[in-house]
Each structure stands twice: as C-alpha cells, then as structure tokens.
Length: 621
Image (cartoon, rainbow, N blue to C red):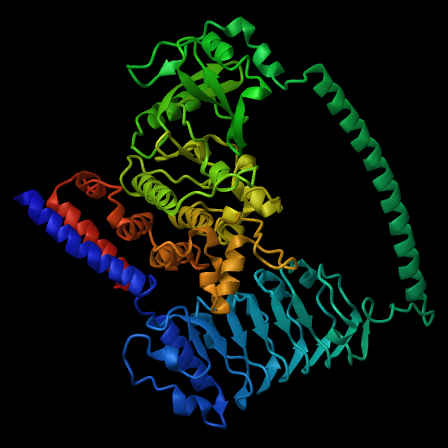
C-alpha cells in the first residue's frame, strides 16, 4: 500500500517537474530579465514612443515581456530574454548598463538610434555571452574598448557610422569566432589588426588614419628621428626573430629525429611494459570476490605485453587496452597517465572508487601498481564507446536507432545523477564525453573514468587544455572554465548536454558536417545559431525523422539545449536531466519502478523533500 501511494505521489510530482522543465524551458520566470528591460526603458529617451506603447510592466502573465516590441525570448511562455532588437526606434541616451541583468541574451541590436557617449569599458561584463552586437549608426564616441576581446562568442560586431576615435585594439584579433566586423565611417586611425576572417575594404572605409590590409599599406615617414628608431628596432627585431626561428627549427628537427629513432627501437610503443618483467609476480588488488585472482603477469599475457594492437581507446586519463585471460574472460585495462600522486594516495583513491557501484558505471574490478605504472582493471564492454557507435570510421555503417540512443541518454543521465546526488562521496566526472560512455552487449550505457580526474596532475586536466587553447575535447568544455578554472556540477551538465546533442543530431562536438563550409564553430555554437534563426528543428538527425518519434526528438533536443546554456545557473541539475529524459522515454519501459526511486534510499519523507527542493530550484523560489 505504501509503495502504491509512493508511486502515485512520485508520478504526480514528476509530472509537475516535467511540465515545469519542458513547458517553461527550465526558467519559470526571471525577475532579473524583467528588471533588465525596465532599466533599459527608464534610461533611454523614447521620442517615438515604441517602448512606452509596448513595454507595459503592469502585466504579470507568464512570458509577458516576450510580447514587447524588439524582444525575443528563449521560449514564448517564459520571461527570459534571448535577443534585444531595438534598431531604428529613435532612442536617445547612453549605453544602457541595465542590460547586464539580461544574463541569457545572445544578441543585442541598438543600431540606427541616437545613442551617444563612450561604449562602456566593461562591455564584456555586461554582454559576455552575446554572439551578435550591432551598435552601428549612432553617435558613440571615444575609443573602442579592448574589453570587447573578452566577448569571445561574438560572431558579428558592427560599430560603423559612429564617432569612434583612436586605434582598433589589436586584442580584437583574438575574437576567433568573428564572421562580420565593421568599423567604417568613424574617426579611427592606426594599423588594422589581423583578423582570421576575410574582411573587405568597405568594413574599414572612411576612417582618416586607418591603414594596412585590406586598405592601403601603412606608410613610414621621415619627419622625425623616432620613425627611424622605430624602423630600425623593427628590422632588428625581425632579424633576431629569424635567428630564433632558425635555432628553434634546428632543435625541433633534431628532436623529431631522436623521437623517430626511439620509435624504431620500440615499434609497438610498449617498452614500458617490457620493463616490468621483473615485477610479474605483483598481485592485482581486486574489489569483487567472484573474479579470479590475477597477477601482473596475467595482464601482460592478456594484452600481449600491452601491444598497440590491443589498444581500444585513449583519452586524457590514459590508454585503454583489451585483454583476454587464459580462461577466455575479456577485460579492459587502463594504463593511467603519469600522475605525481604517491602510491599510498593512489591506493587510497582506488579503494574509494572500488566501492562505487551502480548499474550505469563500468564495473571496476581491481588495480595494480608496478614501479611508476598504475593499471586499472575494468569489466569488458562488448560494444565499445558511444563515440565509436555514433561516429564510425566507416560511414557505411547503419545509423543507431532512436530507441537505442534514447536508452543510452537515459541510462547515462541516471549514472551521472547518481554520482552527483547519491554517491558517497559525491563525484564530479570533469571529463564527460561520448568516449567515456561505454556500451555493453545490450547497449546499456556504462560510464568510465569516473573519479579519475582526482588522480590527474593539474596539467593533464581538460581545464588546462582549455586555457592553453588545445583543441582536444574542447567541444565538451563549459565556457565558464575559461574564467574560473573550477570544476562544478553544472560544468558536468554542460559536457553531458553536448553528448545529448551528439545523440539527437548525429554530429561531432567540434565538426558539424551539416553546417556551411564557412562555419568553423562548435556543435553548441551551431545549435545556438539555428535557435536564433528559428530553425532548431533542422539540427535533428534526418535518419531519425518521419518515424513517428518527431515529438520525442524535439523534446530531447530541448533538454540538451538547456544543458548547454551559457549561464551555469540556468542549466538543470543532473537529477532534473534524468527525470526529463526518463519522462520522454516512459513508453519504452527502459526503467523499472525500483530504479525510478533511485534518487533516495532514506524513506518517504526524505524522498518527497528531495522532489520539493528540486521543484523550488526550478521555480526560482
């Protein structure tokens, strides 16, 4: 009786949660966005009456600000601003600082008005996540703020037809997503910085002192001794640089030569394994009683001394090998990347991870320490990684069916939710990608590499990779890591959101095959662009459409989009993601009643409290 009542209560509350999350796009109502628009209206002189006639803040219905002139929302029934388009409305005043409260905007157009004064020096703190900024045809004066370089998501920047002075800040060349950049008809001077995009002379025309490509070359003059000094210094600098490059190339090729020689000496790249011959008797510490006792020698035999032919995957945490024991049992053995942690620290951490067990985690069988090598033994997963199944090398392979993709998304979400909310100690993965989700013989998803981020040196984590600008798995990295360098649960949610986008679009995180050739952005940026253009449905994998599941696909896509929202606080928790996906796949019966009750093992009161807390989070109470 208690179980029946509990199930009924759960069903009601989950229905409420799903309605709140899907119906309100994870942001029931944002008072900050309302305050943002009220501040804009109060700070600008509305001579033509566009704002006065349309922006009525006495209305309190859901999504009322979405009906304001010039306002686009993420969803028509929520008060969360996506774009502000106030072009050619006769508005007068300085740049409205209140826009900072619209924390989710991706586009701002204030062009063809009568705005004056300087562009705020802290512009990047006001509109950090915008992809399009149009301030053209106003009366803005002063210099272009270098802080615009921190608006790293900008695709479009229009500052033409103003009264801007000074030079174009060289740091703007760091805006590597820029597709459109225009500063024509200003009072700018100095050299034009290099932009990694094709720009025309019209983008810089009618500035009295601008020079350099695509305009005329900058001319050196002999009007004073400083010019000669500068020119001489430049020549000397180039000479020194040339010498430096020559020396660097010498040592580079010398190093390559040495590396090639080493590779020839060890063609299979497993000299490290052969050096362990004297340690073959070392035992493998096991966590499961039903597993046969193993020694290092058994692992060496199972992997042919960790031959390159046995490699089944590699990533930031290390290289994974397939091994087959003499009794026919298949295993996966990970050679952990170099770690400066002591043997005692490693053993202690592995002892903790050995007790972390869940249906959607790859079973950790044991580990072994030999000299500097740390080996981790897992149960073998017959269907490899999600990445290999979604993006096979042979494109002729049949695309994954929707039911399988949905099953994988729900199961993986359940595993990550358990790591975040129920595991003791709670675990942040920090390296979520489609490569860390493995699939067993029944395509049940199993998460690997959980907890291993703690064993990596700081330089080995994806945080430093992001900062150093290496491509790697950059498509999975949450944008806030560039500022904070701190791993958070919402960072994991972002990374998992990219995996969900992979599942529903079939595209890779850093290479979108369906995008135009000129598009150089990530999967998330492509999705954002489609959303801005009202074409989000075009992102769905065409092999899945027209089979009676289009509604499920679009709901799934919406959940994924909410996971990758730029502001972390706007993203759902892992528990909420799991509940949403489970609701979408309810008719498939992927989960049992007992598994649905997964989030709590502490009785009805605690269980209901957890759902209520989740609801309060969604409603912003």
